[in-house]
Length: 511
Image (cartoon, rainbow, N blue to C red; front, side, top):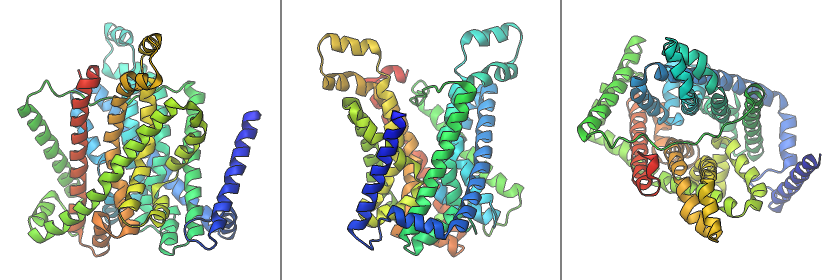
């Protein structure tokens, strides 16, 4: 009861402060007061309800299909372990394509309707669930798998009877984490030419500089995302009873394989990806006017003028994305360290961090750009906000993994908190930090291209928007292909840096 009253008190205080801030500069285009938001909601209740239902249905279908795909992929990896590297690489390649880049192409392929919204929601969730699901499938005791082998049971029987049950707690963690992403994917799909939904209303509000509408839609989106997160957490708690801590791990060491083997593997993955692209287009006999094949993109990029336009836009995008990416990682890690040094701040900082994570970036981006400008600072803030929370959570978990014996040893020698942090806790955090840095690469590209598309009018994001509206599909497909390659290259670069650092500070993670 006391806790509930405290929460209500903090909520009321936040509302009062919010209203005071909105009143400081009457008529400003940046902050809406709670009363203005309530008035907008009352006047447009029917429209908002229809849009909310539409987006929720699309997000729910995408959530279902994306997670089913992740589970099928995870089961296939367990049944055919030799396929793991190939399937994981393909899954990562698709995950690295920014949603804002694939949206226009899906709109062209699906036409009108809900296909792009559902597909983007599925693409937004499947990789997170796949990672946690695989951890759960592997969490089985060796004794149980040996017992199944003694009784002559095969991999399928072990998967169904043993691994599937053991994976449930981990699966629910993945489902819970991916729930807000499903709403983000559905709203981005609505950006690409849908007729209904919260994404459509958000686009109209931003173009009309309607601050009250933008704030209302941001709040509704955040509430939906948090409701999905809480609902799945509640269901998981009721069904499995506990929530395991899942640490992101360091990449598998490839040091034991020679350079020729590595090159051959990369060439095979690239060839397989290109083949799947070509075959999927040909199998459905899609019109080459809008459904470009790898050969079409290659021929297009061989033209120096086309290549110059694309690389110029890409250069602008990367120059804005890199500072935001580094700032987001630094902020996430710094906040985690700060809360370890001063646990009392956790009560004040956590709600702010969770709120920033819950609000879809496509609704906050215009407000942040209005506040910080259309240049480097505004874009950097949006990118940093997008990736700082996952980094913060991962680093917190990493700091908590410091072995108790090590902590006790430092304390027995009278070491201070700084010494413990520097010599024991930060090294323990590094694997989680680098794993988060890898996962943040696609998120950073998504954030920067979204800002370019919606607000700044620069970079490859706006180039994709222009080419989609002018039916220049060669340039559109080229942008998507180049963005995916950049994401994979940066991901690999971070993984290489990770292995180099962990060999020094946490060598057991890369053996």
